[in-house]
Each structure stands twice: as C-alpha cells, then as structure tokens.
Image (cartoon, rainbow, N blue to C red):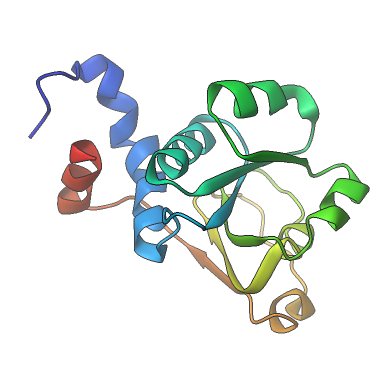
Length: 165
C-alpha cells in the first residue's frame, strides 16, 4: 500500500536503492541506537543507507576515497562521521571502530582496508556488485572473527515495512 502523502515519483527510489539497503540494515540489526555503521560509497545506494541508519538512530559513518562528498554526508545527510579511505592516517585512526559496513560500490576496490575498520565480530555486507572478483586476505577475517556477506533486494513484505517506516 502506497502512502497518500508520498507521491510516486519522489518515492520511486525507495523501490530500488531503498529496499536494497533497508533489507540488510534490518536483517542484521544495524539500525539500532549504539550501532556504528560504515557506508562505503555515497551514490544512490549509499545515500539511502545513510538516511535509513540516521532515521533509525544508528551512527552512520561515510567512507569515501576523497573528501569531495564530506560536506554533503555530514551536513545534508547528517552522517556521524566521515573517513577518507585514501588517507592512511584516517584509516588507521578508525581501525576496529565499526560494528558493520555496508559496501555500495559497484567497481573494483580494496576490501582488506575496510575489513580492518570492523570491530571483533563485525560484518561487511556487499550490496554493490563489482564485476571483478573480490580480493581479500583470510587474516583480515580470522584475526577478529569478521564476517563478509551480501544482500540483494527485499521481498514484498519487507518493501511494505520499509514504505511504512
């Protein structure tokens, strides 16, 4: 059921980028207050992930390879923090700081540095699909019981839950 106060044109992104990010956020319990969640990439999927996380009360930390989107992330989307993944010092300063990461990037990129941002038992969830095989070190996983998983799009029931939210 579509809400009367939401025109379909404005709400259309919810039916793709919205449910693609909402589904793993809810499934993994990322949106709870006190959870600190990294969002890699600030395109359509990343925007939706940050919006949901902030609305649910989690701390959303945008991870991008340049500072170009920092102002947008912090001021417009109300992200809690921003990490420039090209800045080695910033990456080291944030090691073991995140409970979850949602990776929305659809291109080839380094995974191990992202895994190093996760706390003990942290989870990296891919929603962006790189056409290239992923490269990661087993040590990045086993050293802190980290997990890597993926998520596609949600079903009709979950889509309705998202729209109602």
